[in-house]
Length: 85
Image (cartoon, rainbow, N blue to C red; front, side):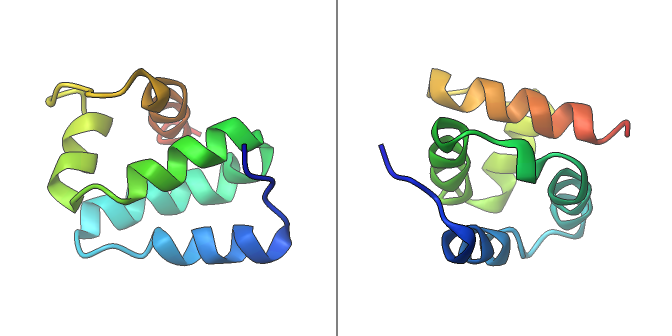
């Protein structure tokens, strides 16, 4: 398991700049409200999630796509919840 220091978290923040406006809005709210409380396991899952193409990430967040990895589910749920904060 990787440990995430402040520099690593800044790099992850950069990963959330995406090409889809909808995804930028959703991830921006998540980053503002929830990101700092993620555990290292959740951060690992989030980084892996950010490696997916934008349309696939958005489909997973909106639950219109099939989640291929159970490791994403806790992070996806936190992203979904952040939309309502």
